[in-house]
Amino acid sequence: MFAQLVDGIFWDIALWVFGIGVLWRILSIFRVRNKPDYSEPRGSGLAGAIGANLRRFMPRSELVSRTRLHIVAGYLFHLGLFAVLFFAAPHVLFFEAQTGFGWTPFPYWAFIIAAQLSFFGLLLLWIRRVMHPVTRLISDIDDHLAAILTFIVMLTGCMALIGEFEGLRVLHRFTVELLMVYFPFSRLMHAFMFIPSRAFTGAWFGRRGVKA
Image 1 (tube, helix red, strand yellow):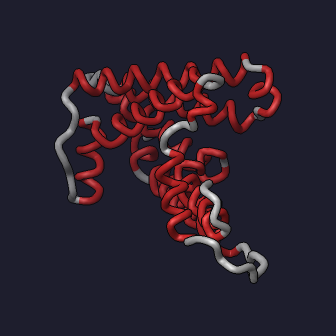
Image 2 (image 1 turned 45 degrees about the vertical axis):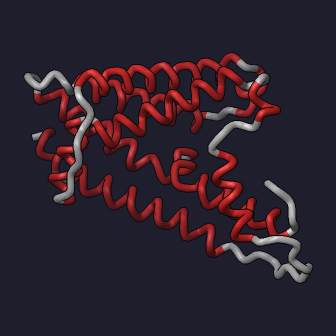
């Protein structure tokens, strides 16, 4: 009964909440009215937007020495999670079943490496958040809840590889649905917002001839 709900109505609800919530948050950016800028342009806003996004994919050299652990952990987590999400064999099969389009998945050993790196990066980021005096002060329940939910989803996903127990697959999908419902209302939205926000900042500075 629970498995039918998870594969049926719960999935439909999570998908609608996720899709509508993400779309609404993105559209809300374009609904914000800015004051007209009558100053004479000193550079290209478009070039500034593109340049800001390209430059921000690499850490700023002056910050590396002070935030080296944070940078390494961030790359481990995000790149590992991206690899697991889009190239783990069960996920590729799921995307193919939903869209009719598939691609070559990772071999099992590559999945294990990517998952372990992602786990390690996430744990390092969370430990730094609670141990560093500044990040501990500015963190709230949303930061911790997002990390915990992401960790649980990843953990249940690895457990679901034990194909003999169907309950583990159902548990993993249920935790994914919980994360999908929570996603649009949390800071996890940065997964969709970071490119437009960097583009806006880069365009604003680019128009003034400043490299952001």
